[in-house]
Length: 172
Image (cartoon, helix red, strand yellow):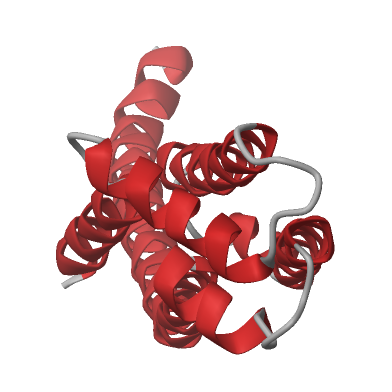
């Protein structure tokens, strides 16, 4: 009988205790989720400008290494084809190394396309140089590079630029 009385008195307290426990647990879970959402929102507010800056720098890199811009910037009248070839490749590599850290902020696919574009341009420069004689000048090499680039169906740099633009559009 005493046991039955203890159970009758304890049962409501246990039920109330269980209800309170589950209510507090649900409240704490909601608060934790709310804090996590606020942290994520703050992170996005800080990271999006950095990512946009990375895309801008990669676009600038691609524009700077496009053959027409690169040759105009590097070529000097009277320069030998070999000297121009060396300067073009050196400039491309330096520009690339300067922007290596940007791969943290763009997609792996985007970065792979940037690398492929750089390597394709270096290959084009070397191919053009190999098709010229040893006494060729920079104007002949530039002409050969433009000829090879214009014969390609797809301009690699334009493909990469379009891909990066699409990535940026997805950020918003």
